[in-house]
Image (cartoon, rainbow, N blue to C red):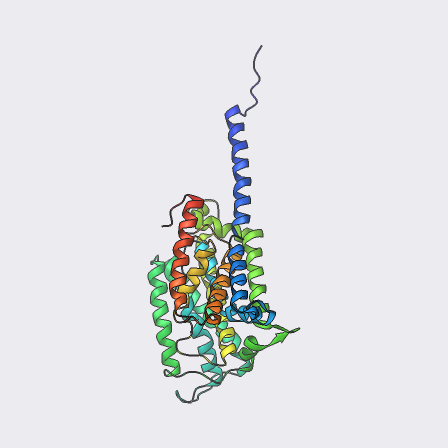
Length: 345
């Protein structure tokens, strides 16, 4: 009797079953990994309570969220950039230049001559336009010209910092447009608007990465750009778009920060990129692309901000946070190496 060929060898069926099981385990691990920082956050809150019972009060936690609202948008921006396998060091300079240029154009500065080039209501659109322009230049240099992304964004960081110094004459801008002041200080139903903006943008980022074709494309490009291109993904367009969106997010964060402090200092954003990378790495975002989540990064910047607050409550210098940031990055890298079995290049 002739044996009927089903077209699916037993080995293939076993492999398929094993693959499906592995996939389910991967999905389960990925979903749990997003919340690995929740226990440390709870621990910091408990320690803070014993240091000062006001540490866990609603007012203090609201203050923590307000403090991190500006820099958290740079973290969100860097998450997208890292997932596609790139990194953008210039985000911290865009954080300062975008609101600085908008204020200089719409309000003028007495130190530079007091010229006003546009109406005050245009401050927010101008800041966003500056962010988009910086991201577009970065994208074209990295993708179309094939230049090294690290060097390009490092050079842009220095250039943008110098440009902000030039347009302000080295002085702090203290005349803030009403729209930027509103972004930093307004309240909606008693909740600071900057927190609302922060949560909405993180929610949008979570949805895009987890539930849309665009999000899958970002992970595919970061995992293997050549394979993503072969699969029909327009990798160049996607990477440039990610860099543009990232710079725009940095501009929004810069406006929130400027509104909170009612000024733009020449040094606004200076050194923030180290805390941003710390938050991303602690939150499980891979530096070599293809892995990471918005939730993990949000928890990363949250725990760093809580630690900073805890240090201030305990009378410890905030400069100690630099050591803590570095130590946490190393610990996070070690844990990621052990858990995933992959090397961080």
